[in-house]
Length: 94
Image 1 (cartoon, one colour):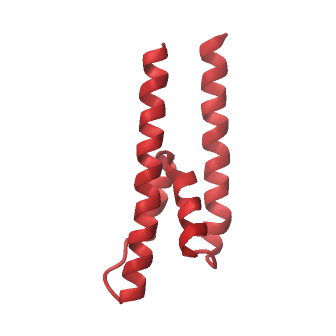
Image 2 (cartoon, one colour):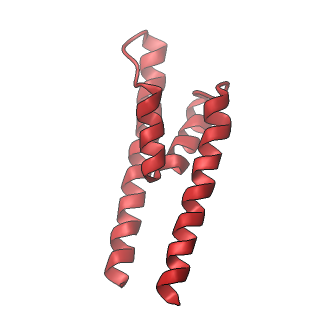
């Protein structure tokens, strides 16, 4: 069981690092007028566990902070992911 928790922790660290770096990349591309990362891709990464990384990237790079879909959607995704992880841990220890 500990092995699964370790794998989950490593996965969450990597997906959130990726999400944070995607926000940085999209911000830089926006500043330079280049091709942008689609919002659907950012939301997909968030749903796959990267919502904290997306939110940190929003704050750190002041990117997508005026978009309601991001300012409301990302915290909601994060809340439900946290609840799902907490429920999974509770079930694992019962």
